[in-house]
Image (cartoon, rainbow, N blue to C red; front, top):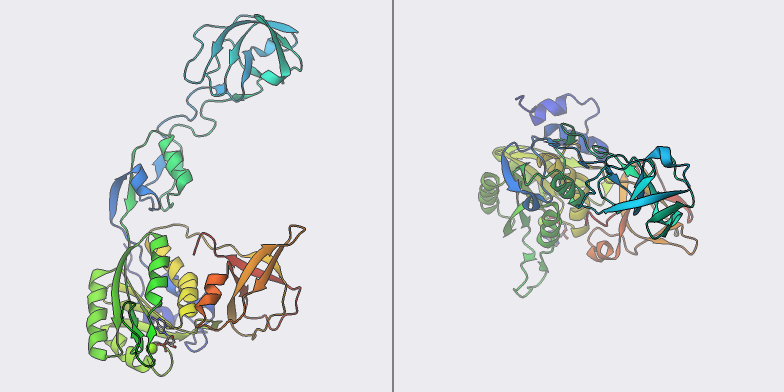
Length: 421
Ligand code: AMP
Ligand code: MG
């Protein structure tokens, strides 16, 4: 196994590296190059593997479907009889109860969807295109030869790779694996993520607020986002801005978890102190990302754990999580390829104020107008502390670095939150 490069090696490879103005895409690439996915695996019963990532490819042990079968309710017969006006009905085939005989010229059987095509037949006529009188079936509208037959192995062939290593198991994959008769799968172990909030002003819910204090909300948004990704969560509470306690908590977190997330303490003024601490404990870089919200971000390793120092502002925490941490965690979980969040286009109903030179993730409400066209309306106040804007929104309006102010009616990119939030 090749060792990942050190942070300083990676930085020295980049000509245009500027920690004080780091483009979003460059920061993402930089992080990606530094990650090393988990390798430990476990074998789980199929249902327990929902949301997990395959550690080996799934090879089909059989043909799916296993037999040629009917795609319709109707009548099965041989294609040479297509020009006959009527055929004798000599039996019935149900799904799971085949017709055992062999059809002769001039004969047909009644057949249900999923029933095995009997010997001597190769074509099915839909029941709506036939008329029955006693044991006689009259062809009203002749099908094409071989019509309405699903062939053995048409879906999957025995020996074929069905799912590759690195695929996350969603409901469709569970069903697909079950259709092969496979009851257990090898998946990567769950990722362990520890997090804590930093700040002298923070109070946990359940205690009254003193003067100048605020409730810690970041641990709740982080909990929710991490839970949705299916990682093991270690909530280490609030740590006040005290170097000794911070050091102790960082060390404890990094020995227990694969990834450590902190919020707060990386903005200008606070960063010096975290910088010294993180330099002592690992290799961490401090960036000012060219984005809003979410300008300050620290990234690197503390001991063996990957480390993300997120900004303190509640919206900035969520935006930096979705733009940087989510991708990184999916990669660390073994997902390959990591699915990117799609960018869709919608017409913005309001003018947008935007500074060129940074990527902005404004919060928006996506809706369809009376003609079914997608439109987006920014939520009101876009301040990075206004968590209500995240709650009201159902999408991010993603405005690239080059974009400046926009008039109402401009087409913009949106990233839908449904499914990721
Ligand atoms: P910082 O990055 O530590 O300078 O914090 C930036 C802003 O976010 C300040 O107004 C903090 O009070 C606020 N903040 C920091 N941590 C939290 C938290 N866990 N919950 C809510 N607000 C926070
Ligand atoms: Mg702070």
